[in-house]
Image (cartoon, rainbow, N blue to C red; front, side, top):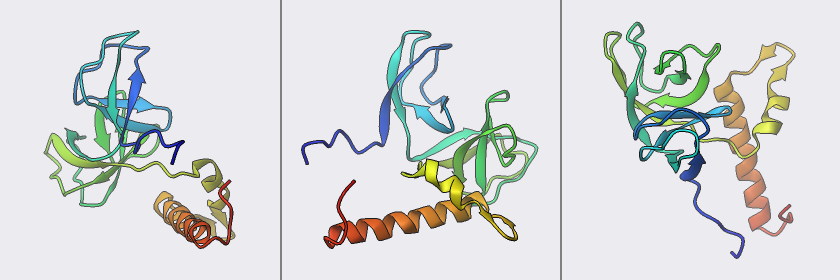
Length: 156
């Protein structure tokens, strides 16, 4: 395909802030990545991974179960189960005790249609969880891809 650029597992990040060390979490809008190398302050550029499993600092006041949704608390530079005021980072790859200072985190895959997902978030009984909305979006994407592959629908 002549318009393919890359698989999307990493991006080149242009740093406009403080220096970033290899392995640091990098918040980009409503998603997080992990710096592959050191990135200089202000004008530095470097690779940030957007997928994979990483050992990251966690809130040592809460236990984490495998599969728990995790968020990055920029003020504490830790992963937490608290969504309010924090950026989605991924899911716990394995359980971690309350007193543990590190945990394994699988970075969250960004949905292709994130802007459209919010329209699915309400029903007459309340709201869907983020996991339910992501599941619906994934199923819709699979259906659309199958229809395109079968020649029943054109690529947009």
